[in-house]
Length: 169
Image (cartoon, rainbow, N blue to C red; front, side):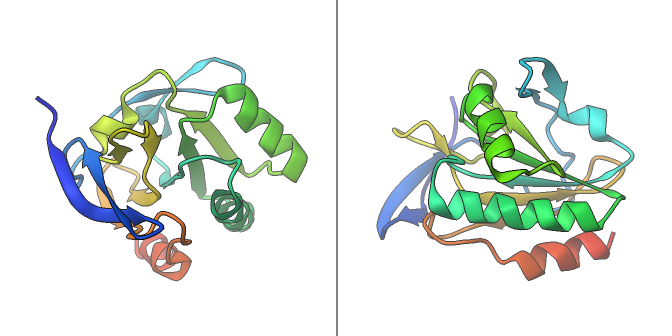
C-alpha cells in the first residue's frame, strides 16, 4: 500500500495529501522511466555522471510553473555541467509546445503521464493526479543531495537554495 502524507503542502491554503514515500537527502535517487517530447523513454539513471536538478511542476500551462521553468532554463544555459529536468504530468506534446513557445532549449522536459515518478518521489497529489511543486538535486553518483517541497503549490521555489546546493556538489 502506498503511503499517504497529509498537510505537507497546500493549494491556495487548502491542505493536500501526497502519495508515496518521502525522498530524503542521502537516498539514492529512484530510477524512473519518463517520456520525452518525441515519445521516447528516458531513464533518470541515464544522467548519472552529471549534476541534475529535477524541477517538478504541476503543469507548464500555469503561471508559476512557467516562471519556474524559464528560471531554470536560464540557470541551465549558464552551467554546462548541469542538467535540468522539468518533470510534470503534462503530455509530451504540451511540453514540446511550451518549449517552442518560450524558446527554452536548456531544460529537458519529461512527462510522468504514464510512469510512477510521482509515487516514487512522494510528490503525487492525491485526487488531482498532479505533481507537487518540488526540487531534487542529484549528484553525479545518483545520490539525492538536496530536496525542496514547496509548501504552497501556487508559489515559486527558493531558487537560491537550489543553486547553492548545486554549487556545493
